[in-house]
Length: 265
Image (cartoon, rainbow, N blue to C red; front, side, top):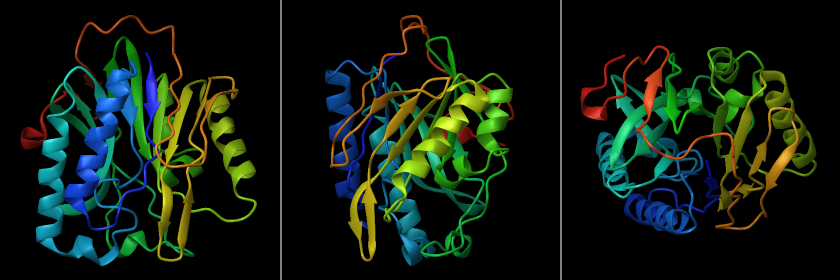
């Protein structure tokens, strides 16, 4: 399996522009031979969207853009951050494959300190769908979920996930990079799984995002670093997976892979 980490610089509130950015990177990843391309947290809305998510029309429009992006995933899979509405509002990651939304993960741990106030806008998630793609089981999570050693990534690894994808909007501050990398490496080693960690780049108000997306192997060894600039991509090969042959299926609490319109948890 070849994985692309698309660390991009979305614009807060520019739903159509961000969707075009995502589709462009999907096309580039497909052309580069990637099987799966991963985007940062809330890439469709920009991060942090703050009070925009309190507008029902904004949430509806972001969902419409997700449907449009999904149609661009013919012959490739993608993990895309967006705002989900399912009774409540969730910070979410969608797994897209071959033109469809296959399943959605809702962020479990919502930061509410320093520059973060996600509990003001979102409800925490309670489900951890595990997908299968090209013979490899895949678990999804969002940003803060990686910082908790007994969080959703641990559950997914315990239930057989071999690749853990964590999408991020992780702001930079001096001295953060080394301990952050050590934390992600530790998760990979502790769980015995590959960890793909993708972050956004650029700035929003007082926040600066440094990218530095990474992939670690199950021993915690760095196998794919990226540069801290827009649009750089890490394209590691995970050679143990067989060639693409079947569409993904879901495991765990979300027991079937279904389109968003018929998803019921």
